[in-house]
Image 1 (cartoon, rainbow, N blue to C red):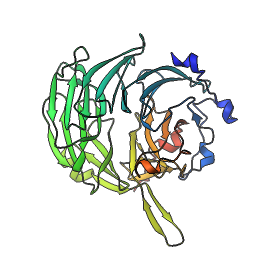
Image 2 (image 1 turned 30 degrees about the vertical axis):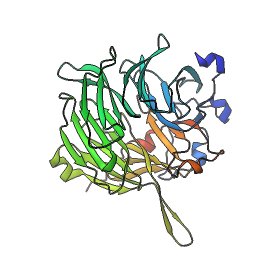
Image 3 (image 1 turned 120 degrees about the vertical axis):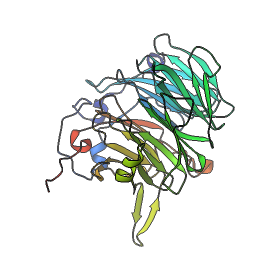
Length: 375
C-alpha cells in the first residue's frame, strides 16, 4: 500500500480549523466566497498530472482518483479527524480516464487510453485486465443487468462501442455499436445513458442491456462534455462545452412538461461586459436531496435545484479548471478536482496548474431544496 510508503496523511489542522470534516451547520448565503472554502481539505500526495475522474465508495469514505499520470489512487477519509490517507495505487499503460466502485465497496474499475478495462480488488491489492477495446476506454461503470440483476462492468470507448464484461473472462458478454465515439456515460439503477460525439445520446434500459431503448440528440447545440443520471433514475443532466446544462427526462411526457436548459459556467468581464463561455466539465447529483452541482473550465462550482429551477449557492473561480466532482455516499462531502482540462490544447498546459483534489464539508443550507413560498 502506498499510504504507508508515501506518508499520505493530512488533517484539518493544516487549515487552522478545529472542526471535523462533518462541520457545523451555519446559514449560507446564495453567493459564497473563496474564504468560505479555505478550510476545505486538500488530498495529500495527489496525482502528478491532470485529474480525469473521481469516485466515492458507496459503502465507506474511500475515494478513487484517476489521472493522466497513468495511475489510479485510492484514499481513505476519516470524517472525525479530517485526515486523509492513501490506501492503494495501481497503474495503467496510459492515462486513466474513468474510475468507479462496486456496490459492495470492495472493487474498483478503471479505463484508459491504453484501451484496457482494469479491475482492482481492495482486499488483495491486486489488479487485472478484464476487457479491452480497439481505442481508448472513455468511461466505465458497475451495473446490474437483466431481470436477475446480474452484476457486470460496462465500458464505453472511442472505438464507438459499448461492451459488458462479467469480470471472469476477457471476452465481452455483449457489445453494442454506437453512432460515434463515447465522450461520457453514467448509470443509476436500471438507467444507462451514453453520450457520444456529434451530440448523440443513447438511452439503455438495463433490463434489456443488449439494445438501445431510445436514440436521441442532445438539446444543446455544441459538443457534449458531461452527463449525470438523477438518483431517481428517471432522467439525466447533460452539459456542453458552451457552458450550458440541459435537464432531461426519459419519459417523453415528463420531458415536455419538466425539461429545460440553462446557462452556467459563464463570466462577464468589465468594462465592456464581455461574456466568456467555458466548458461544463462535471455534473454531480446529491444522493439524498436530488439537487446537483455543476463545475467547469472557469474554475467555479455551483449548487442547483432543478425542480425549483434556481441556484442554491455559487462560488467564485479558483483560476484553475475543475475537471471532476463527486458527492460521497450520504452527500456530506463534495470532492472537486483542480487541474488542466486540455480544453485549449497541449500548449496551454502550464507548469503552474495545480493537480489536486479538495474535499468540501457540505452544509444542508447550501445544498438542500428550500421551502417554496405558498401561493
